[in-house]
Length: 83
Image (cartoon, rainbow, N blue to C red; front, side):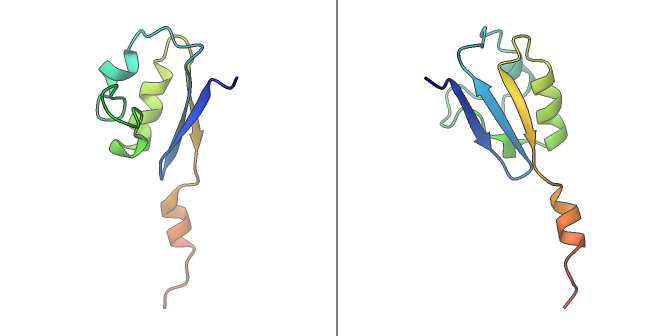
């Protein structure tokens, strides 16, 4: 049974493995706008900056949380031709 789930945002994806989580709640205390156990989905990566999400995930003591980065949207926008 797969216990890892990805929560996809526009700038970053947070991957969570419930079988590894020790429920220390560092994520909930550190960034409650993103990690809210009363919301569905409980992880909403777009509710904070990519940098804030990455910094908070790094604090996870069990490493149940991981980051998957998406390409920087500002780089994609700058490569478009001006009409």
